[in-house]
View 1 (cartoon, one colour):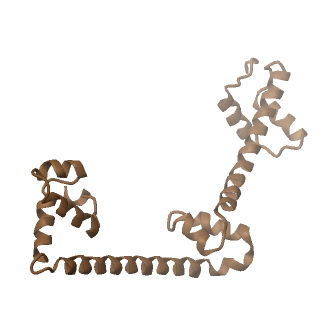
View 2 (tube, rainbow, N blue to C red):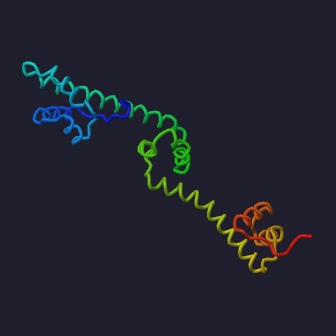
View 3 (spheres, rainbow, N blue to C red):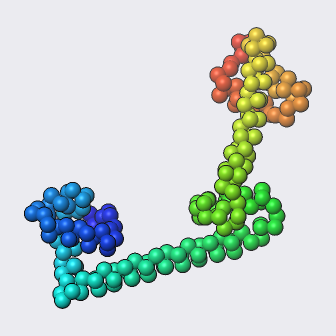
Length: 197
């Protein structure tokens, strides 16, 4: 399929074409170079257009110029993207690192993290450290509460249900609802031995 073909630069094409004149089988050479079927035939035709009266150098020269133009266009697109990031993040720049980190996190799907960190002068490791720590604090609290629930449950010989465990946790200073305790107990597979009438 044409859409899935690999792009080759002009220097590679030129070397492949020159090599093809030294070989007997184009098919074997295409396989050897990992090319699509018929590539060398097409490239030879392109090459022949400029191989009249020593114009091969013009072929290479013109194609190198095309490559330079494409490289410049890529740089321009990158610069435009950097300007866009800077413009959108402008109001957050003087508000400190955590606010900038929030901006980066909110725009991860829009821009690459690498580019945002580069433009906003942020160390990527520092950003990832902040992001992972932010997530870990929430998870840490959940792990701690689940441990407390298990501890109370087994200390009371599996007789306490979610209501009594909630009271115990609240007496210990935890701000937690009975429905949350019930949810955590279900996740932990804890069920009271005392049956309700």
